Amino acid sequence: MKRLLTILIVVITLAVSHMASAQMVWRETNRDVPGRSLLDPRVSDGVELYGANGVITIKTPRRITVRVFTILGQSVSQATLNPGTSELRIGTRGIYIVKIGNLTQKVAL
Image 1 (cartoon, rainbow, N blue to C red):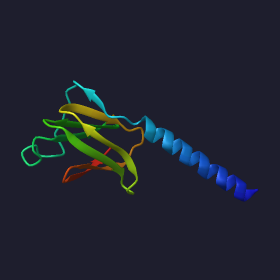
Image 2 (image 1 turned 135 degrees about the vertical axis):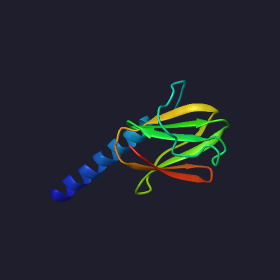
Image 3 (image 1 turned 30 degrees about the horizontal axis):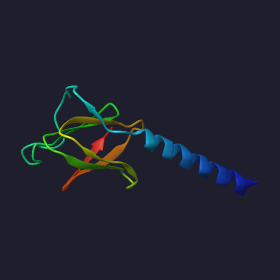
Image 4 (image 1 turned 60 degrees about the vertical axis):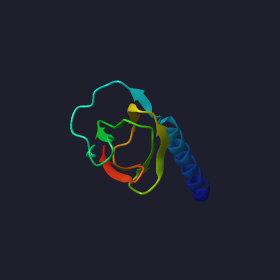
């Protein structure tokens, strides 16, 4: 009985985790982002990265590929973003690793 319960808990946890990650989608936005970028745009070819209130926001002058990971290395999102401002709403607080090309930055939400 305990083994069956353990298996059931693992399956439910994986299903909930998969549903949560499937709902995380980058969206283009026109909203201004207050605060300072976590990346220096002079060093990052104009790419700016912001993290606040459960949202990772990226402003880019060119098309880029972005990968987001949990602090434990689990992939949260991977996308190719068009020039402009895009945001990813993450429901879980924590520290995330954002990789944009050769750049890697920690983001605390």
